Image 1 (tube, rainbow, N blue to C red):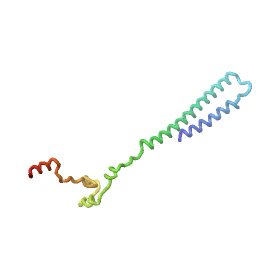
Image 2 (cartoon, rainbow, N blue to C red):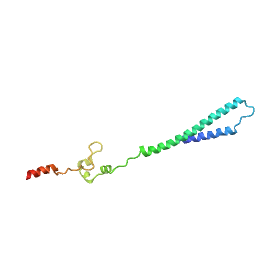
Image 3 (cartoon, helix red, strand yellow):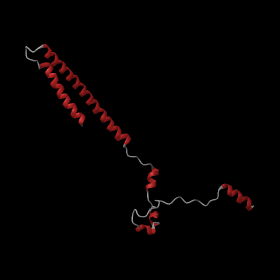
Amino acid sequence: KKMDTYTIVAALQLGMCVALFTEGRLEPGTPPWLIQFYMLTLAAAFLYLVMSVWLAMHASVVAACSEARLLTQFVRLPIPTWEHLEDMRTYAQSYERVGRRMLRVPFLVSGRPTAHPPPESAAEPEPSEEKQLGAAGT
């Protein structure tokens, strides 16, 4: 926003500079050294203002591109995967297992229970154990 304001002000001053170049003649009888000094300072101001408008427009474009890049690449909210969503889910049986901790004072007791119980290990014997049991039983 500030660069846009600077661009407008510099463009208005550039217009005044052009008006002084075309219509801002000094009175007849002015010494030549003063006319040369006047034209030199007017040309320097013109070049300075052209450069100012150019750099302000460039800064405005770069700021808009950087804003878009920040908002789309660096500050983008993460999209959760199915695993994250599954980890955030709670099950009714986990609430039933809370028991006495249901009425605890928050932040005083650490150790939050997990949302869902860990998978129970199956009590099936491994294939190598089956071979040993089968060989011992015969």
